[in-house]
Length: 207
Image (cartoon, rainbow, N blue to C red; front, side, top):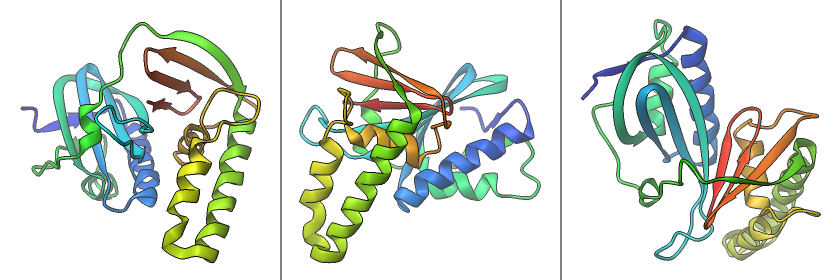
């Protein structure tokens, strides 16, 4: 297996580090699935866990990065291992692959690569507003109910963004991972059981 991944430049590696840091802020013990094929690296993270055999309710984040050298990799590692490596002063553009992998249920869910059909377009600002409103509602519930706020959290993120067919959990993922660019439009695509948000900074996949 490839011992490391060489990105196109130093900024690409730093950007990967910022993405991993945002995901780690959502789940300190979270993981990242690294899929490299040829000159493209796909980096997956879990934002909201699903349930059942089909993983209903799963919300994943995806960033793609160009590689300077072709590679073939598919492994899942701790987010901390990524942030540690990308934060090194001498990191440059090379990401040494962590020797230890982790097992997470969501990494077995791979959305289709083709067959997507555009369903709608949503202003990024509308998604950001929905995410912020959801965070505020959940924060209030946590302050009032403590651990019992879990049911509120599930309800909030499964609620549709006003005027759309997109669950608020997808808006939260795009907002929290820094994918939304103010004033931009976000495309909504569907394929079988999956919905994809294609934003300026990355992709959100929902099942």
